[in-house]
Amino acid sequence: MSVTDADAAEEVVWAGRFLEMKKRGRWEYVGRVGGVQAAVVLAIDDGDVILVEQYRVPLGRRCLELPAGLVGDEEAGESAEASAVRELKEETGYRADRVTSLGAFYASPGMVSECFTLVRAEGLTKVGDGGGTADEDITVHRVPLTGIADFIAERRAAGVAIDVKLLTLLGPSLL
Image (cartoon, rainbow, N blue to C red):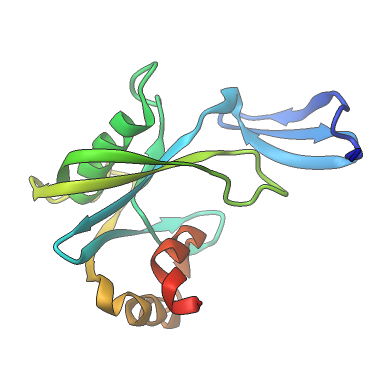
């Protein structure tokens, strides 16, 4: 099977400090400068999941998400698992004893080339308040998995955007 434009040269149309607008044949898409990837943390503790909520400028409102961050943005050569541990503590105040990579995923592959590694965090200990860095204003939510659908519906009704990765928590109830 032949895919139109699959062998076309990739062209960077515009580059900023963090993002690049690219073109390959007739396709236009966005990627992170240098191919930086992200780590997304699925942190479940005693039947509860740890979520974060923060303002996202592209959406113009707050968004409910799994904790996440860029791999290697603070330490060159950092693994996705090490990034997940660091970001979980920074954003939520929880330290994980064990992390396991669940694989690489793409959230919007028709428009964005960014990849993230989903990491499961276990053996959680509360070691701080979380909240992220001074400019992030992160609210931490600890939500029982048995009530996750209702919690997401409540946040949506309050005008909060819902990150697509929360489908990992809603999946069984959607089927």
